[in-house]
Image (cartoon, rainbow, N blue to C red; front, side):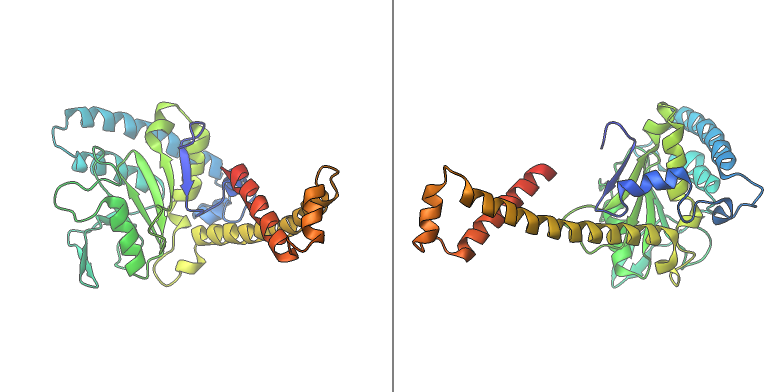
Length: 294
């Protein structure tokens, strides 16, 4: 995680540039009515109120957690902290007592965003567990369980948390690398980082997720994701133009340089054909690109 921030984005679900636009409040979905508030209600005031309640709930949670002698502190995490915070964000967390079976696999997702089988899944585990940690009887970690569930159903977005780290996950077939948007609420609250709590509010609020499975592709999170993909496409288009220009500049420059007589001789004698020269230039350019990205 970037030490300068308490949030991290993996798998290009949304772009870091887009988070700046969200904070500014000038982007789509960032007005009071978009959060189901009255026009007269200021979104900034609602975030400030939620911040005050969140700090109070967090303080109580820390006291109860110290008294909890269980291995995972699941009940304390859910009841004293996570469910109450979700309500501040517009959710009506509904406990799912029975695991769902999909394609022969069992998915013990703890909650729905609100009553209804088609509502977005929300999975809350104990704060003494890590999101990638499998403990006890579950066949998968919280992250793997939610990712597999999203991949196997019509649900597109889901939330997982251990009360400390909060993640948004999206249906994704790329299993070799984890994809998520994560906020470290423990770090945010301990450091009194109100600005990042505001961004958390703007991304995790109930109104960001689909109403149900039928409108998954129309929700704000999906809009932000698609905007990121389109932005990436524009960058790739510009990259293609840049590579083409670099091929011309470097190819011409190497041939014209006064110390490269050996190279000119190889070309003149047919020992280095145009295609091979092109491939060597392309290899050099992409090595430089990879180096700059790294």
